[in-house]
Image: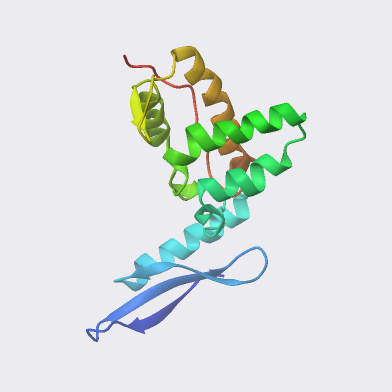
Length: 170
């Protein structure tokens, strides 16, 4: 059952925290609100999501792309040695420089589209001139990116997978 706790802000005003228990029974907060009613509504929404099976643990989305890709996704693949090496190289060269420090929960379709748009542009990295990727290569790498970003969705730590079909703009 959702409930509300009252807190005092530094300025002395009352603030209200919506609270509920997650599936393991741990106490959770949905945030701090200026009204009792808003706090209760948010807590009830969280309980409904929990009951419907659509609740996502907010801590799960804090892991960065780099941590998830290198420590969870890649080691969980059952691949030939050469395929594993190619995936590790693709992560290191194409994805970690762009997505590496982003928390998984913050990677949205617009960010993936930004990567698609930038992947085809020629760049200079560490003094080396690099041609942009061809549309065919972008599609190939996008398939792998989709797999990396789909995993948290499959395990229930992300509400959606942001890597849908890319749109090419030249």
